[in-house]
Image (cartoon, rainbow, N blue to C red; front, top):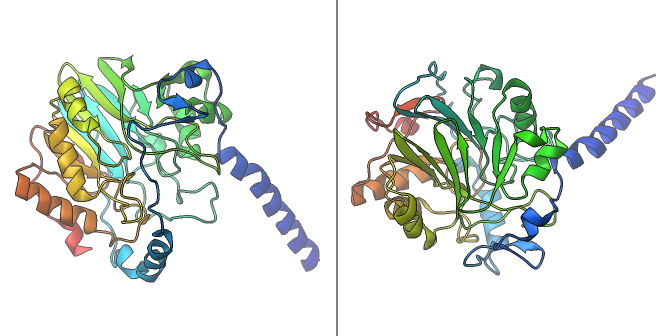
Length: 357
């Protein structure tokens, strides 16, 4: 009997892997909207200035550092998590849920950025980088959304289970870069709720105008890369403007974004998961501050740190370095705890809560 039960369990696990992982990987897009994009050439999307995803000869040393220094990459205590406050219909408020997941409340409208609620960022629920803190609230407790915005299709920004749950519990459209809609369609999101944009294209969500803007990154959920576009985002309404970098290396396009769409009241800036081996696809904290200055970002709120360990640097290194650089350059910074709402017009004093973790 025990042997039969073991065999049954193994067979069930194999069937789950055979089904669940391919579904989580999504679907490669096709169609003229993708292939006619000025950014699409020779079967893939391209950056304005092509980055080198991994510097030649550095992968071995980066991997050794990643596995050797594991203790520094995990906090010794518990990261404090705050239960998000009730919805508010006036002003500009931003609630960071961890990693890059953020809720922007502006002019009574609400936009959720890169929703990731999963325990791991991976096509498998059994392996891959694991959460360092719990989500501040269940998806079902979110207020009514006017849009869900995705920056690109990497697993730490596009969570299959979260997308399915949002499609079930909300009626908001999913506003995504070109090609990302193919993943959502495979996950049963209705086609009329998927809005795909190229860089500098916009969608009106209630009082807010959502515009996809350039970023320097790459895409892919499987072995083939760059079949979908990546983007930064401008969220603009009568009462203010927010810029979100998405994942990106530092590049000259930030000055152009600032000139065309800025200034901004606040900017959500990627500052974590950097390494010498991939200098062109993720910004260092110092580059994040420079990008913020380039776009004329107002209040800087760092994202893409503290929730998943994705690079060999210590877990709190991104905000330590960011705060030092921001002070040097006179940039105002707010570093909320996961779940903590920031009133952009009256941000909290910097208390460096991560130093006690």
